[in-house]
Image (cartoon, one colour):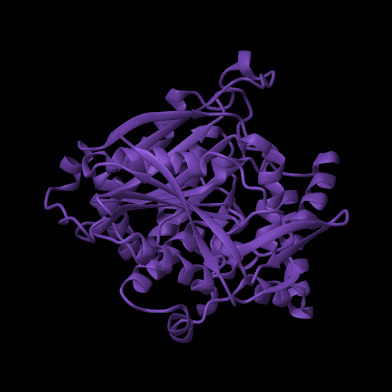
Length: 458
């Protein structure tokens, strides 16, 4: 049997201040506020087992220290006029904590239910902090820590930094010592940099780069609908979600990257561009690529959301696999340099291009979510089998279906799994059928494996 309680984390004497929102905050706030009740799809969620279990007082104290370390976790966002958004960093306040008490055997189920409860409802960004916490307590000790955060407070990279910092705090560190060793850019500091003359020039250059690439890109990547009966924009149609889990891809991508002298991220994006061009009939491919925007050390230590999209345009992507991968390196470098900007201003410029019929199809998305510091073989042994044999262990599943998203025809995420890489794909069935989705995913995998085998002795 599970019982329900509530406790409180009290935050005192933390950093406080008010200023304009960052580009990242503005971009995500604009998305989640438009989604309304569907906004929780963007919430981040963690269900962490604690080994060994610890007293609740210790866990709550660790969470208070985490709040003191990262301002974004106690920041509210308030509209400011027609085109403004203000961030308010609260220096004091209380965070309610949901507690579920049950037997140790029930703890995993209780944690799973609690994380869905905390992350399954929208945040009121003007009135509450974008961070929720819960504990699963068994016989007086916390067995699971459950966290949920709004995407306005952190992105996936920031989530990894938050988990690391929480582990260090639990091991005895404090916010002051951690920030001294690893200074982390706080949202108010980031906003000040973006409002500076250098920041304004960067914003203008990025928006100019975007508009030039959109004007040069293909007007339609998929010229013909895959399912004409759905092409009438049925608002009730669901987007299938496919998950390809491949041990062979995890091995092959490292080998190809080493042989071609590029990053494994460039190999995967180049392979995806090559496969999309071959399937769609458009030799030029354009992806919106999610970029962490953490190129400086202080930004790399930040939890707050900084990720924005780069416009990645690769001409003649269908011609040759190796050529596509090699050019991906240089094209992505330029694109990533222009992935920080005022999205609201960019959206207005793009809307004008679309209205004039001068904008490329920019409905294909690519998001490599992997942490460079964490690989698929960190916790499991690297397989000894040949790539051809490993390819037979690939798994393809269809875990979910999603409601349509504006300006999304295809979206692919890259994830790290123990002993494998995962490609998670969602697509508009009017553009790409389930058969087409499988063809795309397996085509990306097969092209990288084939290149790795061909270069085995090269």
